[in-house]
Image 1 (spheres, rainbow, N blue to C red):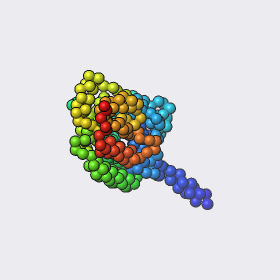
Image 2 (image 1 turned 30 degrees about the horizontal axis):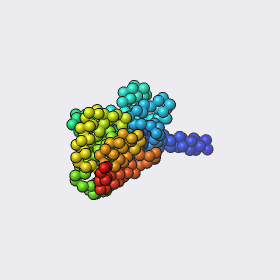
Image 3 (image 1 turned 90 degrees about the vertical axis):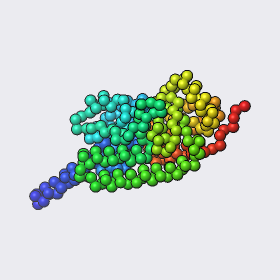
Image 4 (image 1 turned 45 degrees about the horizontal axis):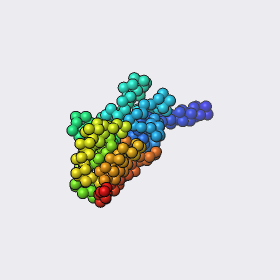
Length: 292
C-alpha cells in the first residue's frame, strides 16, 4: 500500500514538471497578443508595458520588471525602439534571454534618409515573419511543446495573410493620386511600402518631435499643391499642431494607431483594421471645401 501511494505521489509531482507553462515577459501589447496565439496554454505571459504609457518614453522600472520574475524569455520590438535594452540585458538573470522580434524583418528606410523606420509591426506580413522568430525561440526553450507551438504559429500566419489580403482590397478604393500618407511622426514606412503609398512624415521618429520648421514650410507648400484630403495624427498624441496644419491644407485630420497601442486588450487585427478603415475614410472622401 505504501509503495502504491508513493507511485501516485510521484505521478502528481511529474505533472507540473512536464506540462508547466513557459513564462514569457512582453514589452508591448501586440507582442503579448502574438505570444498568446502562438504559445497558447503552453506559455504564461507577463505584461511588462503598463497601460497608458508612451512607446518612445517607456523605461521599465524594477517594479514593472518584477512581473516577469521567473521568465525564460522577454519579448521586445527591437530595431532600437526600446533604447533601454542594453541596460535591461545587463540586469537579467543568465537563464533569461531578450528576443527582439523585429530582428528578421527587413529594414525600410525613412524618406530621403539612410535611417530605418523602426515601426516594423505596421504590416501583417511583418508580424507573420516575426511569429516565425518567436516560434523558433519557444521550441528551443521547450521542445516538448513543439507541435502545439507550430499549430499556433500556422494559424497566426493564416490570420495575418487573411488580414493582409482584406486590407489590400479595402485600400484599393483610394485613388492613385491620393495614395500619400502624411503623418505626424515617421512610423508608417513599412505600411506604405507594403500597400503602395508615398510616406510623408512631417516630423521625426517619435511622436513628441516637431521637426525642422523651415523644412516643414517647404513641405507644406508641396502638399498644398497636391490638394491633399487628409493628414494623420497619432491616436494617443496631442493633435493640435497637426490639426492646424490640416486646416492650412484644407484637409481633414484623423488619428491612426501607429505605435500599436490602439486600445487596452485589443488584438492586432482590430488595431490594423482601424488604421485601414481610417485611411480609406480620410483619402477616399472628397477634398475639404477650400477656406475663403
